[in-house]
Image (cartoon, rainbow, N blue to C red):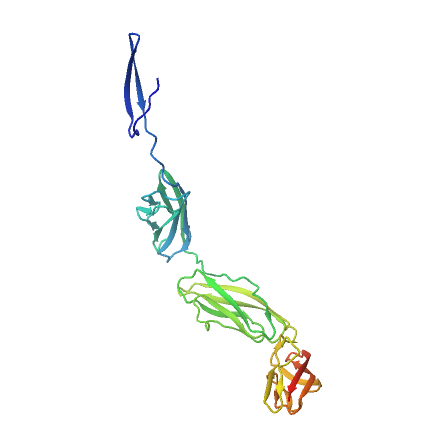
Length: 324
């Protein structure tokens, strides 16, 4: 004998079924239990503090909750606790919005006490925790790695140096030992940046120097670090016009065409070293130009030379056509 439910079962139900066959009556008791309610959309996976270690004077940090999948409709209410409320306190609970995989809550810290506190979060029977450490040891430090990126003779350079995790900005900077390469300077506080200084300028010769800088925060904590900075030789001097054909000119009309250097070490000086310039034109030494008023039509080929302050030179042949 088969039985079919004609409506959904919403609660545990017991029914007595009876029947008669060939003069014999029998009964049976059937208990129907509904399926369990749907489970929340995700389980609590982790609790992280950022940062998890702070120094005294810090008043708060941030806690992040992560779920294994999206939270259910209506959100997820998570119970919170601190094992040491003299170090840190948290709200009694936080509600993570529906359909979210993460949530956050603040952790308040007593700025005058050092020690540890375990921050816990509990949801649907699962507890996750993280340890907060408050230390009196300063976390202030210079975080830029040594050596600094290489500089190059004759080229503008800015090597930035950054500090982190002090108590109060702007940080104050000083050069306490050694020297920076010739042509460069230690910027100290001149950049007016809250956490950063730099070594800037145009290096004048190949060398490697070592120097030590100090950073100081507004609470009086200090940090020092020694850096090495190498200056590479100047780039090869080249002429970068990209073509050997300068623009056409016209007899009796003022003419000017620029010559462009690349690499080397400025200042540059230009000269006419071979061939024939159109009559009435000349090569200007600085900045590099061919200029004047041409007097004769024709096509003229000449060689220009550029010299830099480091002793390098480069030459290129150019052609100018002068129209009648």
